[in-house]
Length: 176
Image (cartoon, rainbow, N blue to C red):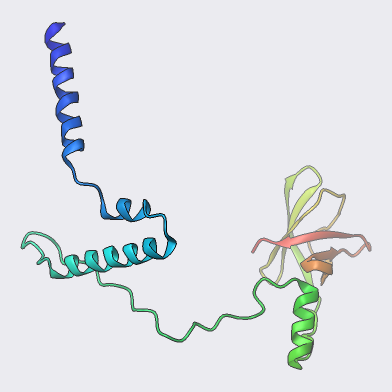
């Protein structure tokens, strides 16, 4: 018991003295700087020094060559679509301001049902003869049989509706 206690204490002391003996990281020193301009200058100096040290250090013969660096960013900014993140009204206004025509809504899909795949109570998926599979997005009674002709049309806010031969329509989303 005494030997275990002594070896545990010796281990703790040896680990803690190693931690105490380490010099502080340069970035920790920069982080303690209160003046924002000085802190930024310190980080810039230390980053440049690290990159210089890494480039100057020869690779050991038994180590693999370092991975190639990604291409440097060019001075000109990447072109980003100005439409990213806009909602429907903003997108419509941006297109109008640029003089672009409003794109036509997707044409309705008219196809025949190949099979009906039951999923959950009141939810089913429908495989069409064009290879697409559409699943109900909401629980509702909808009866479709193989060989029935159905129409899928675009709704508001990106939704789609599947209308059966009997005139009932349900909200659907494309699975495949």
